[in-house]
Image (cartoon, rainbow, N blue to C red; front, side, top):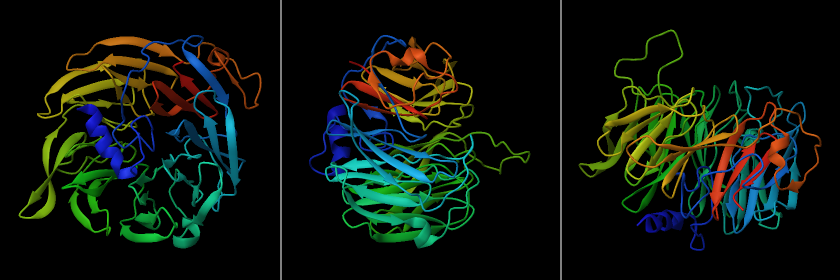
Amino acid sequence: MVRSLVLGVMSLFGSVAVAADWPGFRGTGDSVATGQYPTKWTATEGIAWTVNLPGYGQSAPVIWGGTVYVTAVDGAQREKGFVLALDAKTGKEQWRHALEPTQKAKWSETVSRAAPTPCADADGVYCFFEGGNLLALTHAGKVRWERSLVRDYGEFQGGHGVGSSPAQTADTLFILIDDRGPSYLLAVEKQTGKTRWKTDREARGGWSSPVVATRNGKPEIIASSAGTIIGYAADSGKPLWKLDNVVGNTIPSASVSGDRILFGGGTSRSKDAPPMGAKGNGCLRLIDADGKPGYESVWSAKLGISNYATPLAYQQVAYFVNQVGIVTAHDLQSGQELFAERIDGPCWASMIGAGDYVYFFGKDGTTSVLKAGKEFEQIASNPLWAAKSKPKSAGNESRPGAGSEYGAGETVYGVAAADGAFFVRTGTRLFRIGQ
């Protein structure tokens, strides 16, 4: 049953897609991997290879046909951008494409650096940079088309840069720009790079990514960001429904499980009280009311908070994790709170459900592995590195067990799962966990 659901979702990305690929942010948008994955590893055991990446990046890797794609930027003004293709089995670099981002800006620990995750399909890989560049490359590294959203629609004006990753269907990319300047949801034709439609949004600030849901066999774009959740028709950009008064959904994206939409949020950090009727974590269901597409609120979480990582629906349980590493689990159907327990630490990367387990990839390099289900049972705490010394070299290299030599100041930003292995990305390195 799980495999049939995954393959049904994968059909949105083209007829040749296979369940072993991980084609975008959170895979196909649900962070669910098929097959069996390792549950225990250490800094010196169970890590197949480690590769040093150029510059710095916060995007997650994506995987298609045995190739891992990852992006990065470099320079004091983020004046260099890179797209890398690596062999998934060996970590060997296959090709590298360099570009000059249109909008340059100083970076800091709170400003994005290659934060948007790419998309991949049978025709190639699609990459978006916070400098405004949007481009499509073949699997051999040849540029198919390139454009600048900054030149087309104006400079991005978010205080922390752009962190939103594109979503995709078989023929279209969807890009959400929510900042203090021109804000919009954009649909771009994959084959040509031309705009299909552009729907303006209220100026706001958000890092969340759009996600594709399916209603009556048709794709619908869900954007949860900075106070609202809105459903858009994928073919026209027409807003179909809207939920207001959502608190804390600036970073975590919505998560789709069938006709259910999980959204993450939490208490406001401002001194002002949240608006009356404000919602944090919760669950919606897509419905048709009087023949019109809409939604209904299924349940709201009273205590759980999502600060960074997108919620996960897995084996009928909804998982949320907050900024100090407390996991709150709810029954997906009823919303009943099942447990609230602390794991090894907070997560910036999104959690993944695979086999009988749920994986929480901690920002400090330690992965907490929970047994999937309605009771809390942590079976492993797995470090990617043990020492806190600086790297001995900055070259691009691939070697087993390299994780034990580094760790100082590293942050885990993104993860992909394919072929029984996890691909974990820090700012400067990429790991394959699983032989």
